[in-house]
Image 1 (tube, rainbow, N blue to C red):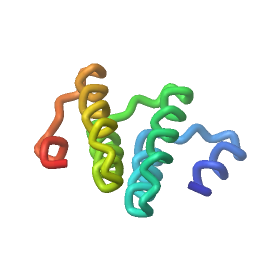
Image 2 (image 1 turned 90 degrees about the vertical axis):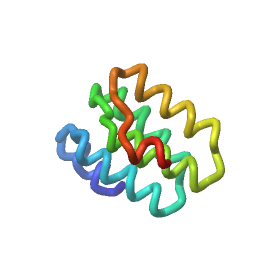
Image 3 (image 1 turned 180 degrees about the horizontal axis):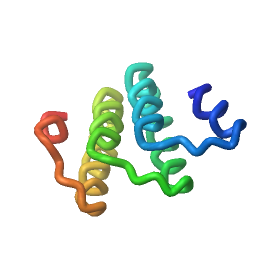
Image 4 (image 1 turned 135 degrees about the vertical axis):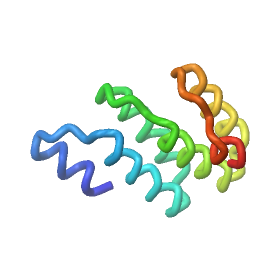
Length: 91
């Protein structure tokens, strides 16, 4: 997460891979709510989330017992024209 702040301070726009790494770190760290904040930041930065982004965010929500958010993220994925994969459905 510090990397995101450093990139922005240098005037570098983070891409989807950078956001995915940050979201995955939040998932591993049990900070499911931060994953939602990062998804919002992606929208603000006009970075399109991909299936990996959604899978990591859904895994974080699932681990926190936030099933409604997990289902909402799955719907959001579909609304954005993304096709859920095997990981999406097993999350």
